[in-house]
Image (cartoon, rainbow, N blue to C red; front, side):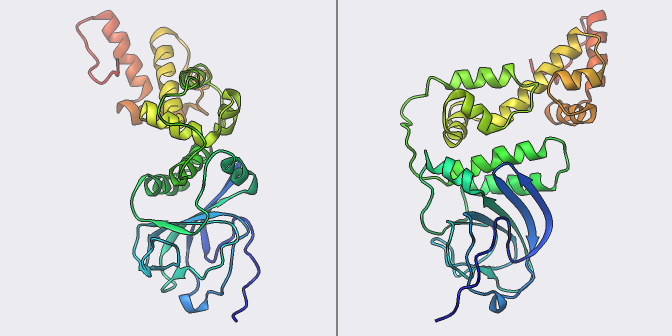
Length: 289
């Protein structure tokens, strides 16, 4: 019988790290393979993990995976899974997400994660994993917070049944939205939001998106931009002051977010508003009334 190698520690995979980001409860890496399939030993991981195949042909024994899978392919392995999953050749690229034991326990309290290895090629979990990979490459001040929220989203997308009914909208959902709006100027973790509401973070991610058609983190970003708009229109505060008051890390963070939402820089928006106030016939067509 082939000997199983020592379990790989949290955040460790067979590959060369291009990027590694340590988040509260998760370790996220973009890697390239360094060994051929025949050189990968039979092994396991101490923690539950995801692998998203971005490039290259991947061999996996997970349920739902073809013997030789082309990308995209998302694979979930529970902690302790013994396998020899690998790239056919030492060429390719993949995202790896390790779930800390604490995060796994939190998730297990309210959501039924797969108990066996499973693979996905389409669906919400694959889309969320791609968003994590994209965010991994960004070096924005809010990247870590966004990635943490996306990791909880990934658990939500992967979980099967939960301990909550989905027939009615929970009464706390509007309180969640109000909390995010009122506290958008603070840097909040999704686990903190869930704790304040007395709900499970996986349930928060799932119910919020189902009801409001966006994630809590997306709604929080929208609230910050809306607060910035209010301050741009109704105050003489500098952009640096508005950035901090609206929950952005700095002025450049505000400018990038503002452009993403409206296609215009905040200073240009302010000039348009001032001209319009002087001349009511001037209209700002991109304003999101």
